[in-house]
Image (cartoon, rainbow, N blue to C red; front, side, top):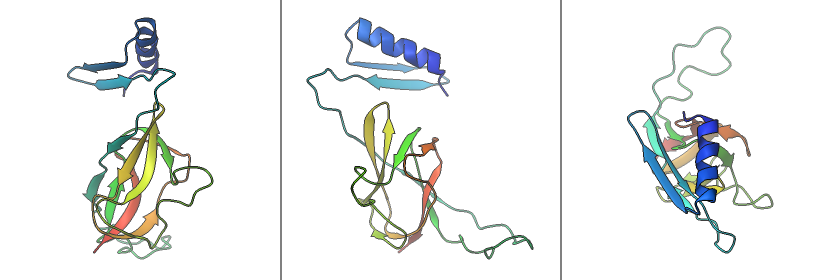
Length: 152
C-alpha cells in the first residue's frame, strides 16, 4: 500500500502546479489522483466489484454457532479499492440493498468513497443478498468481502 506521506506530497504538488490529474505506476504500486476545481462537480466513478466464489466452509467445531455449510454456494462481492463503505446514497436514504434483496449484475449494492470520489459498486451477478458483512461508514480494504450473494 502506498505511504500516506507520499500521497500527501503528491496532492501538494498537484495543487502547487495546478494539475487536475496525475497517474504514477511502477512495478510495485500504482496511484491515480484526480483533483476538481471549486467550480467543478465531484466526479462519480463506477468501479466494477470483483466477484469471487466463497470456498466451502471448514468442518464445524463444537464452539461454532452456524452449520459448516452455512456459506457454501454463496458468492462474495468484494471491494475493488480501499475507502469508506456507504450502504446508502445519503444519510437520510434507505440502503441500496438489504438481506433478502434480489439483485442483478447492474444493481448498485453500495458506494465506496476514495479520496472524495464516490464509486458505485455493482453486484456483477444475479442473486439474493444473504449477508451484509460491513457496517455503514466503515473503512474497507482492497479485496474485502462486503456481501455474500446466493446466485440465481
